[in-house]
Image 1 (cartoon, rainbow, N blue to C red):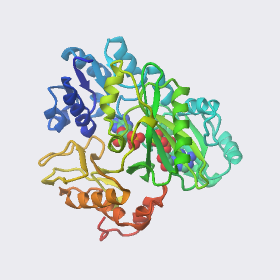
Image 2 (cartoon, protein in one colour):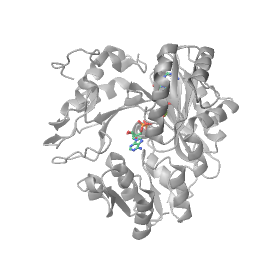
Image 3 (spheres, rainbow, N blue to C red):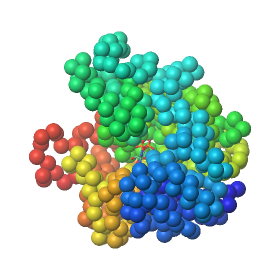
Image 4 (cartoon, rainbow, N blue to C red):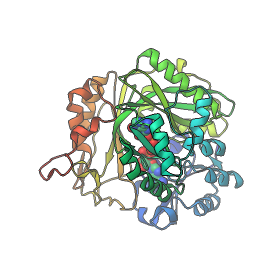
Length: 457
Ligand code: ADP
Ligand code: ADP
Ligand code: MG
C-alpha cells in the first residue's frame, strides 16, 4: 500500500478522496491555489502545500508544481480526482517517470479516451453500437456539408478533445451547420488546445445511461451497474440516479456486457465509466469512456455498498478485483443532485459570494459530499459545483421523498443555487414516473427573452 497520497484537486472531490485516505490509514497531502487557502479540503488533510496562483493553469493544472509537491512531501501516489489533470496522458507519464503512482488508468488508456474519434473507431471495430458519424476529424465546411447530408440532419458538432458538455452544437439544417462550424472549431481549440471537430447524428430525445466499470492490473473487469444521467443542462448532468428507471433486466444485461466489452477493447485499468445514449426504440449507442472517477460516483456506492475511491486506491496498489456484477447485491435506489452556485432563472449564471447562513440536511438516507461551510467565500476562479446531495432508500419513491425533504432543509444563503429547481423536479409527475430524457430540464427554464424577474427558481 502507499505511504502517502497527494490529492491533486480541489473542492468536493478533494474532500472525498481525503476521507477515503483517512479511513484507509494513509497519510494525505492537500494541494491548494492561493485562492483556496480557506477550503475545507486543506483543513481535513494531514499536510498542505500551496501550488501556485489562483488561475488553474498556474496551480491545479501546473504539472511541474504538483510533481514537485509530491516529491517534497514524500508522497508515492497521486489521486487526480476529476477534471484538471485526471485525464491528461502526459501527467500520468510524468508521475511514472518520477516513481509516483498515478491513481487512475494507464497513459495508454488516457490517450485513447481523450481522443473521442479514435476511441469511437476502436469501439466500432469491437462490435459495439456507435452513432453514425464522420469517419474522422473534419477540416472544412464543404466536407462537413457533404457528410451531414449523408448521415442526415439533425447533426451534432462535437469536439474530439472535449468534455463537460463543452464544444457541442446541434445543427438542424445546413444553414445552421455553416453558421456554427467554424465557431465550434475555434472554441474547441481555445478550450481544449485541440481544434479537431467531427459530426455525429443527433439522437432525438435520448436518455443518457452510463455504466461504472472497475478493472485490475490482471485483466479482471466488471461493471457495477448503471447510472441514469438524463437530467442535464447544456449537455452537463444535474441530477443522476441509480439504477435507471428505464432499464429492463434484459437491456441492463446487454448494455452491461457492452460496457465490459468496451473496457476490454482498450485494455482498461482502474475505475472508469462507459457512457451510452438510449433511444426510444431500445437501441443504445456508445458515446465515450470517462477515464476517471466520475462526479456522480456516490450513487453507485450507495446501491452497491462499494467505496469506489478506496477501490481505485486498492487496485492502483496492485490489488485484485475478486468479484463481478453477479456477485453484488444491488440494493435500493440512490439519487444525486449537483448543488451548483448558479441561478437557473438566469441561464444558470454563476452566483459567487460568501456563505453567511449555512444549514445542512441530515437524517436517514442522506449523504452530503461538499467542501463548503459557514463563512466560506466561493472563489470566482473555479467550477460552480459546491456540493452533491445524495439520498438513498429501498425504493425510488422513498429516495425522491428523502431528497425533497433534504433539499428543503438545506440552507445556503445568500447565494443562488440549484436547490429550488430540484425541489420542483422532485415534485414533478414525469420525474416521479421516471418518464424523462435529456430535454427534460427545458420545461423549467424561462423562454428566451422572457422577463424572468419574478421567477422564483
Ligand atoms: P461527469 O462526466 O463526471 O459527469 P463532467 O463531464 O460534467 O462530469 O465533468 C466533470 C467535472 O469536472 C465537472 O464538474 C467539470 O466542470 C469539471 N471539469 C472538467 N474539466 C475541468 C477542468 N479542466 N478544470 C476544472 N474542472 C473541470
Ligand atoms: P462530454 O465529453 O462533453 O461529456 P458526451 O459525448 O458525453 O460529451 O455528451 C454529453 C451529452 O451530450 C450527452 O449526455 C447527451 O445529452 C448529449 N449528446 C451527446 N452526443 C449526442 C448525440 N449524438 N445525440 C444527442 N445527444 C447527444
Ligand atoms: Mg460525457
